[in-house]
Image (cartoon, rainbow, N blue to C red):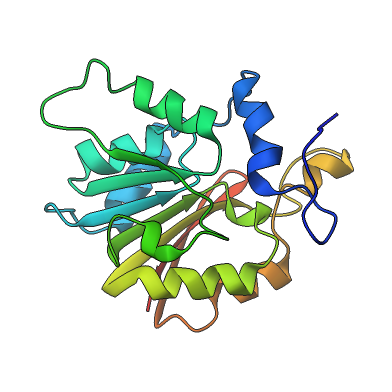
Length: 203
């Protein structure tokens, strides 16, 4: 049972909820070859432009965006243990510097705490479902997404798991959440990957 400190609405604060899980050894779905192929199809080459990975966890996605797609990437996560785990992979880095890492809760932090005011690519993998105030979160994304940039979201869709476990079914976003996510973008492209759906959203 989580001992996370509650916020004003009674729910656990994000850092207090996720930190014990990462510190306790909990790990999550890795980025597979098929997912990487979808990114190659939907995202423009980085060419040294800035990218921000929200909820970066162990840093696997940020490293792929940085080293394979060619962006200058910063990974942010509200869990200090997750950030430390991501940074630990850079002890023996490949050619060139690796991503930058920052412990930060994107939903509450002053956005000036980010290293840059705008990013050509913002990625959000397996995170959107857990955001309490989704409209406020999406407003923040639009404020830091550069003109012509892409917001890449990977999220589970409700009802796709072949299970009757209600806790697992709730891991996916609802049709209402989907509508909220995709409204007010000039271009919305999607691709399905088993229980996941990937969104490439442009302002």
